Image (cartoon, rainbow, N blue to C red):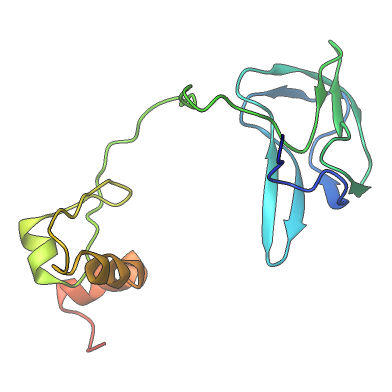
Length: 156
């Protein structure tokens, strides 16, 4: 039994961002698809590159219909599959240089984390792990915290 994450029959509003003759490679934006208040960027799969031969005009298409065809015959759809155990390729790893300031002194001083970094909250049942996680999820934007932490802002 196969259950797809996306409905294969639903039609999505496709807006192309490439044109025939453009050179594309992995990670480049082929077009966009709005969903509710969010706009998805349809990307070239990481292991694909070539020259665009054909692009579907703006309109509604299913995720199974090819929206871009390359000169070598590769058909690109609004989705691509990726093996679970294969890491996504990156051009370079960025060094963390911005602290994630939470406003909770115990975390900021004793357990500093870089913006975009990873942290773990170990502890037994009932020790407040979930409360801490939910508090962190409600943190305002980092710019506001940086200003507040530096002392040039007022109160919350």
